[in-house]
Image: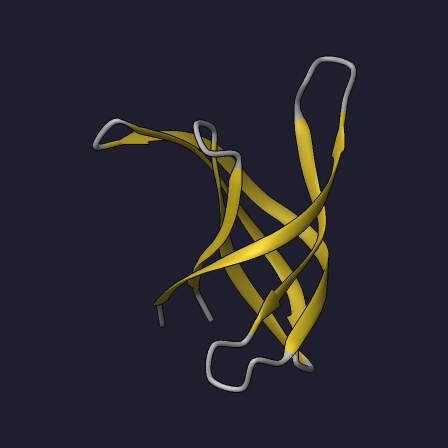
Length: 91
């Protein structure tokens, strides 16, 4: 089941000498409760670049344990604005 959430996140990543980066950990605020959640990314399943309506993004599909549940989700990085978002929860 896909759920589009589009929540902005603060993210820590690793950057290689070639300029490629890998997300490692992020935190976000739950909109309903305003609770701050920190998440360690377990695995990156895929990475792709996308240009949609002129917006250049890098999309990472990842797995992590969020609120004691294993989840698959989509993280998006906007190259123009340098912002990260949880875009979809896939499970």
